[in-house]
Image (cartoon, rainbow over all chains, first blue to last red; front, side, top):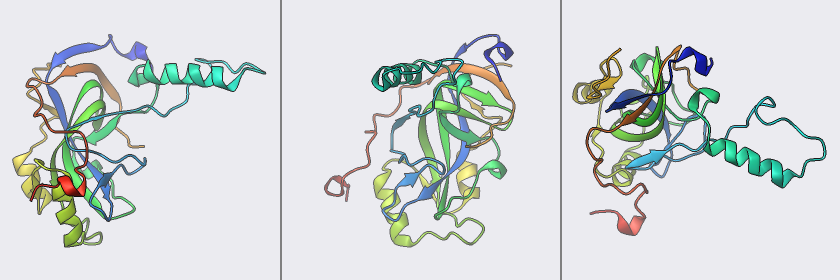
Amino acid sequence: MSTNEFAGLEFAIGTVRGFRSWNGTVDGKLQALHQTGIWTPGENVAECLGSPSKDVIPTIEGEDWKERQAKVDEWRSNHEMVECQHGFYAYFSPAHIQAGYRPAVHGVIEGYGEVLIGTKGFRAAKSRILAISVEPFEGIWNLDSFVTDKIRRNYPGVPIFESNFAMQSEFPVVNGLIDAGVTS
Amino acid sequence: MGDIGRPVRHIELEPLEEPIDVPSTIPAPEEVPA
């Protein structure tokens, strides 16, 4: 993947919706499946923890590690999504969401800010949780009711559904683009 | 990491409406609404 595959960064009004899942912690917080970060209510802003390739920041023998770290920090805060893998991930079909290592919680999010849209889903620099489903994942990862209660308290204002079907009915994901005014 | 498939668009999206002013923090137990 390279920036050459795109005509350039487009601008539009709107957000993109998708399905995703989290690990549900015992204290009712939603944790990313492959990261340690906890999602919050309201706006979540992605933080890049990646490392630039040697092509971007060459390794210099004997370089002071603080100077190198400063370069890495600068790169982390000033590069486009196409250069690494950071961002909040979501998918256009519930079939593409994954189970967690702990009881899985499913939901619908909206992404905005810088967004890379793919054929299956997207990753976005900013995101908000629109809805949560506490339906057990394939009947295995059943959330205890006290955890569900804590999720309700930790994410005020976010509708919580007992089934994925009910959530999807209320928060449909249609081609990933909702109210965006984006044309292909 | 997840798989979003083949990248098709790189876009900067500005929400149509101002987001509802919800604090981006998990409420502390004493702040939890009744």
